Image (cartoon, rainbow, N blue to C red; front, top):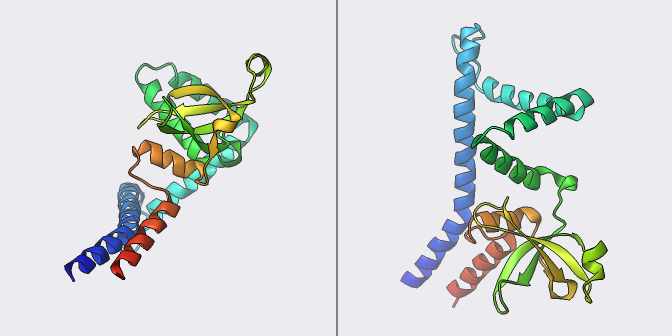
Length: 214
C-alpha cells in the first residue's frame, strides 16, 4: 500500500509541479509589474473607486512590448536598435550579460530565423559518450573538399551557458537526429539535464502508472 501511495504521490507531483510553478511565476510577474505601474497611474489620477484599475499596469507592459516590436520592424527602428546594440556591446561587463541574454532569446523566440536547424546526438568527446548539439548547416567549400566523408556543421553548446561552445565538423552518418525541438534541447542543456522534454515526462508518468498497477 505504501509503495502505491508513494507512486501516486510522485506522479501527482510530476503533473502538478509545472502547473503550479507556471501559475506562480505569472502571478508574481503580474503582481510586480502591475504594482509598479499602478503607482504611476495613481499619481496621474487614473483611479477606479479610489484605486488604480487592476491589471492596467500589466496591459500597459504588453502594449509597450507590442509597440516596440512594431517599431523594430520598420527601417528607422531597426537602425536605431542596431546602433544601441553596438553601444551596449562595447560596455565592459555589461556587454557579456547583454549578448548572452540576446543570443538565448533569439534562439528561443526567433522562430523561422533561428540559426539552429535541428537538435542532434553524436559521440563526443570520445566513443561511447554522447553529447547533444545543434545542426547548423552542411559542410561546404574547402572543409568538405578536404574530407573524404560527407560532413555537417554542428554547434556543441556548454552548460549552463549555451551561448558559448564549439563548432564541430562531423560525418553526417555519425549524427543522430532527435525528435525534441530546439527549445526543448536548449532547456535540457541549460538545466544540466534536469528539465526533460515533454515526451520523456509522459513516459515517466506512464511508467509510474504501470508500476502502480502491479
